[in-house]
Image (cartoon, rainbow, N blue to C red):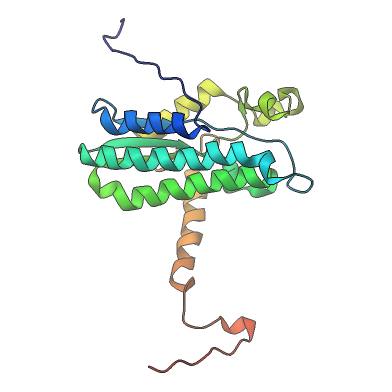
Length: 220
């Protein structure tokens, strides 16, 4: 009321397909929705070895499936409406799997790749897509995953309010990828430059000479 804005609260368990589809329909059909902040996520503090697929199914359902489905629905709805924005919460573990669990890191690498591909595909239609890569952040995700905050080095633990402020500053600056803790953007730019340098040679008609493999010859 203080800001003259109507607020509607929809509670949903996004790991439940019927509830997820209800949110999808809301995004698709409500023309007042122009921004999707995909902040729903979970972690599981278990190593892959000694675990079962079911130990990670809820994580996959939330971090990957829900993020993908909501992103697809929102992208189509926003482009049809002439523009909009999707902010996806990835993680620094999406590019630094050495310091995190394999399934969680993999899910966040997917969110980063999906976000960038979505921008590449739909950006011309007025869609903005930002991937935010937090480091360790002071939230309840740690205790829910079975790890106490007290076990973390305070030097790497960011307050969630600071994270949000930095993410929004990155959004306002037009960043497609925001890493709130990274001091020098030149480091990310160098990472990107190295990745782009690979592109011309990622798909060729013969194995690289360094493998010593003779390519099969095909008739023209």
